[in-house]
Image (tube, rainbow, N blue to C red; front, side, top):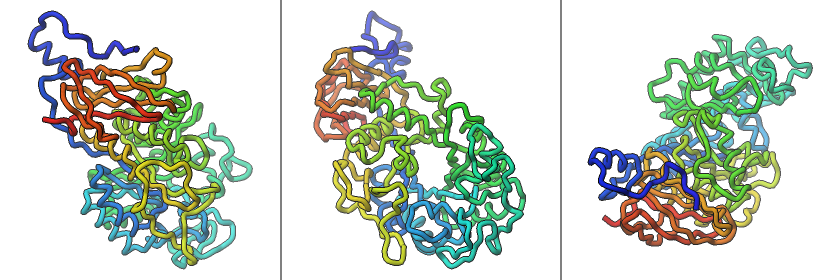
Amino acid sequence: MRRSRSARPPVAAPIALAALVALVLAGCVPAASPPEPADRRDAGILMFQWTWDAIAEECPALGEIGIDWVLTSPPQEHVVGPQWWVAYQPVSYRLESRLGSREQFAAMVDACAAAGVDVVVDAVINHMSGQDSPGVGWAGSAYEHYRYPGLYEPEDFHRCTESPSGDIISYRDAAQVQNCELVNLADLATESPAVRERIRGYLDDLLSLGVAGFRIDAAKHMPADDIAAIVEGLPEGTRVYQEVIRGNGEPIQPEDYLGNGSSWEFTYARTLRSMIDGGSLNPEVRFGPEGRTLPSEQAIVFVDNHDTERNGETLSYRDGARYQLATAFMLAHPYGTPQLTSGYAFDSRDAGAPADETGRVIDASCSDAAAEPQPRYDPGTWVCPQRWSMVQGMLAFRSAVGDAPLTDPVEFDEPELRAVSGFGRGAYGFAAFNAGASSATATFTTSLVAGRYTDAVSGEIVEVDGDGRFTAELRGYGVVALHVGAVER
C-alpha cells in the first residue's frame, strides 16, 4: 500500500495540546467525536431537453437529494426541426419553444424555487440562426439569416474577413474564433451597444421570472469584455457560468473570462475519462492552477455534457458502471462545483428528444428509472442518473463533508489492488473506489472517528476502529463512502 506524505501519521510521544488540536483540525488524527455534517449544497444538474413541465415535476425529488441548481436547455424561440440543436438557433427572444410556453417556464421556476432548487438558463447570445433560407420559427416569427424583424438587422452581425468561407477554420486565430461564424450561425456583433441592449433585455426578462442565472453558451466566441458589458449590473448573486472550451495551444482560454464568473473546466472531464480508462482513480490528481486548470472556486466540473456525450470526448451514459464511478469520484472530490447530466439515449449525433406529431418534446419521466445504470438504453429512453443509488449516496456524502480538504490519499502496490484507491475529507468522510471490473477487499486508514458508519452507497454498516481503520469489499467499479451524516452517535 502506498500513502502520500500528507496521510495521517501514527500518534507518537506526548505532544502539546495546541499541536494536537491543530493536527485534528487538519484531518491528521481522529478527533474524539465526529463533527456535525456540513449540510452543504452546490451540485447542479443539466436537464438536457427536459420540458418545463417535466422539470417542475422532478424538482421536488432533486431538492430532496441535495441538488442546488438545474440547468435548462435554451428557452427562446428557435428554428423548426426535429434535431436537438435547433434549440441553439434562435429566431427571437420570445419564451416559446419545443419545451414549453412562457407560462409553463414561469411555473417551472416557481416549482423549483419551492423545492429549494435554483434555475440556470442556457442563454444563446453569441448568434442567431444558421439557416441560409428565410423561414418561420417555432412560435411563428419570420426570419432571414441576417434579419430578425424587430430585433436584429444585417448591420447587427459580423462580416467575417479573417476566413475565406466566413466560418471559423482555425481555433489558433483569436480573430476568427470571435468574428467568424460557428457552423454558419449568424454571429452577433456583441461589441455593438444596440446588440448588447437587446441581449440584456432578454436576460432581464428571464430574471423577472425568477431565474437564478445563466450559462453563457459559446462564450469563447465573444470577447470577455463584451460579456462583461452585457452582464454588468445584473442583480447581486446572479449566477454567471460561461462555456469556454479549453484547447491546447489556443489563444483563448477560460482563464480570460473569470472576471465575469465561473467557467466549465473541460480538462476535468477529459482527465476523468483518462483515469477510468487507465484503471485507477488517482486520489492526488492535480487540479487547479498547478494542474493547469481553473481555480476550484471558479471551476464547474462534469463527467459529460450534451456535446461531449455526442462527440465521444468524454465518458457518457453508454459507459454504464464506469460512468457512474466517475460521477461518484467527482461528487466526492473537493475540486470545483459539480454538474450532473440528465438527458436521453440516442442512436445518432443529431437525434432530438422524443417528440409528438407537432414536434413538441414529450415530458421526461424518471418514475420507473432503475437504481443503477443499465447495460443498454433504447433510443429515446430518458436516462436518469439522479435516480441511481450511488449518485444519491454520493450527493449525501458531498453534503456532509462540505468544504473539508482532501486528506489520507491512498493507492495500493499489490497487483490485486492496483485498481483500488481512496481519499478522505478530514474527519468528515472517506471514499474508496475500485476502477477495476473485479471485486476487491482492502483496508483503509482514515481520519474518521471510531464508530459504526452506514455506507452511503450500499447501506451496509462499516466499523471504523480507534485508529481510523476500516476494511471493506468493493465490487467492480464500486464505491464505499463513509461520512458523518451517517454514523451512530
